[in-house]
Length: 281
Image (cartoon, rainbow, N blue to C red):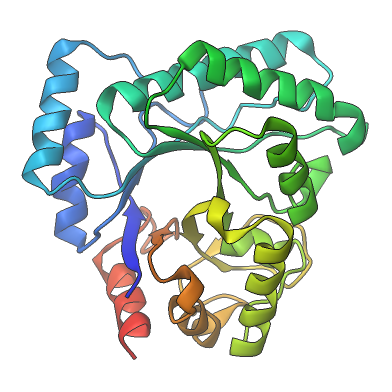
């Protein structure tokens, strides 16, 4: 049985996300420790760190991930923006490590039409510097696959594999987003589709690098390149597809983290229950 989790509100203190996750029945947690549309990294002090660690211990230390701000772009041609992205991601990874959080999920950014190969050396240089500056002992940096709009990096599995090969660092892994993959042309609507897509994921990237799954249905169709999340079963992937993903033995030990709209305020107990039902039957 996979681990069922959700993106959780962390307003008022990161330690509060544990109780909120428990209330919705989630066994794995993702949070935005800072507002996702603004620059900034988590601000920690001894009290915040100890309060978080106490809450984590009380709740059995469930898998816990930060999602970095959406402004990060390590692939653009603006050196100031890239440097700011590097510094922000460094702060995120350092904070995750200090708190004992599993990792930081992030979008590499967009090359804005200049081409992946052109921007690759710069991308690798910035990620390497993030690892060097943050020097994490346990927290990992997790590259998320993208939906493919506007030259976004990592829509194709081959681009993520190329970045991993260039870095060759065990502190870097992958977050697989079901909606983004579908939008990028990887079908997941039937058991056969799911098996083929996971085969491709394993062949190109290697499942050993995949640490967590973003579990989201897609408003738009296969290959649309649009990042629009739908509640499980209400989108184009559908319940049959998610049942197959949840029963795929190669994904059995990974956290499935919901980032769906729910009733309007994000994942909720009802959506967690939908996922559990599909995982059980």
